[in-house]
Length: 260
Image 1 (tube, rainbow, N blue to C red):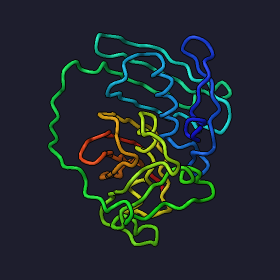
Image 2: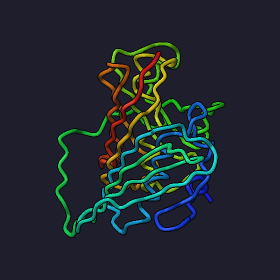
Image 3: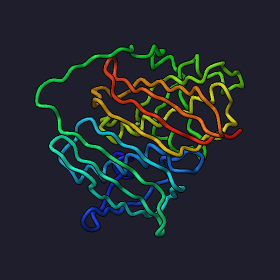
Image 4: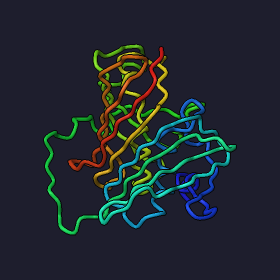
């Protein structure tokens, strides 16, 4: 079994209730990665509907998710012919750690319009990019093959850029299909874009994250670009795009605290 499947496995615990053990194998600085938590909650909501096209998942991170048992409860809040909408709560020790909202759509009967008014990002070839190393306390990079475009990686050595743009690639180190939960993980696997201009000592814990998946990828590695433009009021936003070649896979937005 792939480590990601092992660490996202859900056990039914009653109507709309799922138990799991949050793993410490997908962590950033000893805290469960937001994309990993989003993937778990999306899986739980997805088990409550047969509509699986173009899901929109938003998670509010209300507390630190620790590597121990958790309970996810799912409530259907609206239903129509096209959409099913859910609210989910992840709790540990009786305290809520994350709350998610999910919109799952029925696939259109006819092929829909595909119109892009923005081109895919220009990212250096996968083999030419700089691989995020395996690091103590950053277990995510033991499983994820994250590679940064050389023009965005100067912050590693203290050479900062003027703009907060992070580009690169996301894939599993151990081969696995990039399905919906994997796409959500990739959407939060690159280091924060604001580090490119502000340096490695920046602390950027996510408050809220939203990912809209437009297409499931066919390849095993995804091209990513993330940009932050406004640091103000102690917070920073990050807007992202995830691509499979010339096909848009997902768009995302994160809101995070910003501290030096």
